Image (cartoon, rainbow, N blue to C red; front, side, top):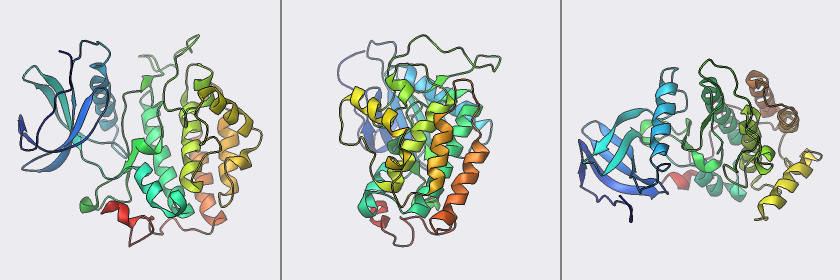
Length: 312
């Protein structure tokens, strides 16, 4: 099957799910808001377009989410249903989430979050990566657009979800040992947030997900990254290399000293190293005091805060 992506219309039925509206689309297919008698959900559809690799994205997503659900589910959507519809497309129905961190960041004062809010969100975003790494997967596309909060009507606006596992890669073999790095790996991810290894076309490891998380943390807290104005991929890579010598450029005030310390630790990690997640959480929690914030304070979109309009 090739050509145009299948478009589903509001009111259309896919098995027991009724289409409410389209939420977005990518190269693989589209995402719709659907409902049944129990509530609202998100449905991802993926159609074969004669390209073998296209159809694998949803399969990978299902396999990662299924594996995660066995371990308890801190920051991941739950799969409600999956199948193939009339030999036209594959579909997966999962938890419907709220606004992305990208939208919430833009809705804040000066295009970033308040420090207390960004620290709390950062801790949850890292927990999601720790859980993913624990089942042997790297995310490889950590960015504010791939994290969301839960839905206001479910009282989940302080809960962070991580999405989109289409770029994931298993870094362990079936016996749990870490796979040897490949000689060369193509660029994966998003240029703005990608780790230095990615620019060097090296195989990625857990510390690369953490490096990307650090860049995201800097952007959520300060509003922009030092290379935000550069579009050339190689130049962005050089800027990231340069920042290693001057971390204060990545974390200008009001960012706390602890962010520098975490970044320095992550920068020194090697391919086979297991991240000390607990140490990083400890430093993140210390940073509340450094910036005079409380972990119990409302997030920016709660109680009429600076980003509350984004939830409307």
